[in-house]
Length: 135
Image (cartoon, rainbow, N blue to C red; front, side):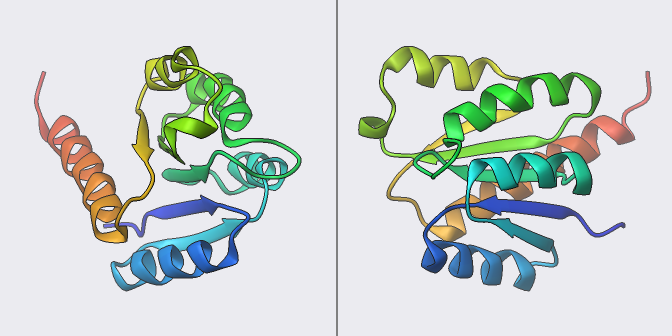
């Protein structure tokens, strides 16, 4: 099986380091970004299978990044996970908009890295079932 590529976008270096270590130990190729604009460029260039983004970041928020990814996901699907406290979203309508984007999940803070890994592994488990099914 080809190694899965994962992008983590967060302006808090400690969170980047913890998540990067957790996913690398689980066999993922990990790339990181410290703001939404850098993450968007890496999504277009590196074509990750999974994008995990914090909401509150400089230059472009995670919410704005999710909106930008909506167009990219029309051409190439990938799992998009938004990490945020409900308080950092300006409204529940933003949360609903994020969750309406195909294969996009909202994970509230605080979260455990183990839980995040299980969400990602479930996505690939479901993807494998779909690829293995016969139509």
